[in-house]
Image (cartoon, rainbow, N blue to C red; front, side):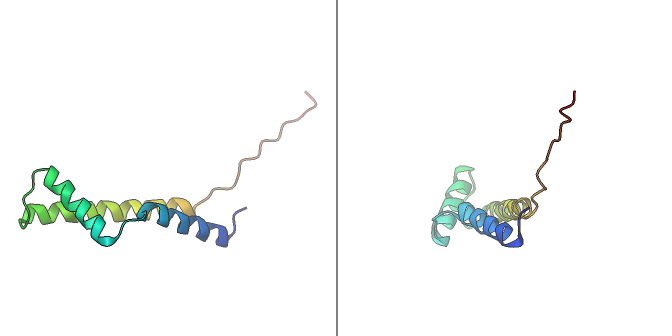
Length: 84
């Protein structure tokens, strides 16, 4: 059965995998590039909303991944009667 330490270790690994090796500036540049590719123009409300949605989606995904990593159901053990 997983211990609290192993759950935290999994969570830390997931967090590192999600963030990758990008700096905050690189993430922001990628997000801006994505919004530009959608046709939004910089310094507009629509562009700001696009950036906000990307950030909110990223945070929701990280929260879900964290929840999934913390909840590890017990292993399933199948016992068969060998008499038959």
